[in-house]
Length: 377
Image 1: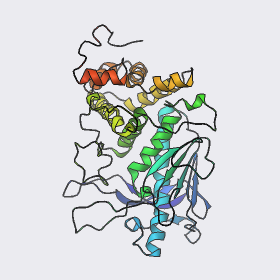
Image 2 (image 1 turned 120 degrees about the vertical axis):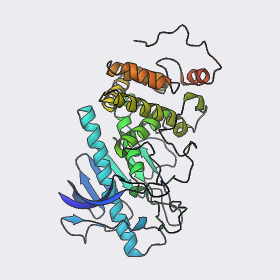
Image 3 (image 1 turned 45 degrees about the horizontal axis):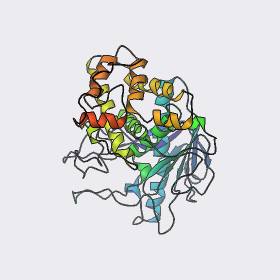
């Protein structure tokens, strides 16, 4: 057991309604230092690969680093050292929390997860995002062999959080300091080992599909909202974007299938429709004194991912909103009527392709589903 610093729940909003990175606190973490910049926990390893000795000079029991406003290229060496150390402990704490939630909901632990900090960032070229990777073709290409059960890669940061209040100190947006990014990427790990939207379980271990469909992105956003306790999951670093802008990805905006964008490269935007519908369903189940919606979702994803078949056919089937909704309704019949009504308000029905749902919600195919049953077996 070691003492670390991490950002916890945000208990307040700033005067301009903007949230911050979280409330800084010291917490205990069951982790072991296994390298100069590496922590290992049960089923999780977090490693900063930039060559710094972050833990060699720290106290054997306390690894309480200062966030140092994210560090960054304008920070001095000590501030950057503190920011990197905090990034490792913060990422470890929140990734472990997300994995623990998944294990409780699934009644089993997920396969091991490796988080690497710094890939794809080189002198003169920084990367500020995060992604979830499996062994297989990907862009940008991975320079190293990947862990077969999945890896999260977090960048070093590329810009400062956009602030409109000049009195507020600038914060360099290091992904390891952003709980939403950490939770979202762990969400992809949960999806891979439950719903397996790309049917990678049916493919060779070294030839996995790294593309994400809308259900994958949307479910990861929903799980992030559950863990953060707010539908405005990206409110800190995207607070300058209006709530109605799809880039904000607020889940409490009534996004419907009418907003689905056809074509590739739209997984995040289309995923917001699914995430928004899940959030509405969860809130209505709670209002009706129901419980266990997120557990039912995890059960539904496991059922979806357990199907056998041809890879291409399974990939197509598992990309349909209606397919996962049907599994969700079957997972808990007690809440099925509430969930059905909530999802229908977002244009999601337990039958039909995503393109059909889009056309129906836009009013172009009003009679398309007239002859179909309300719920299919």
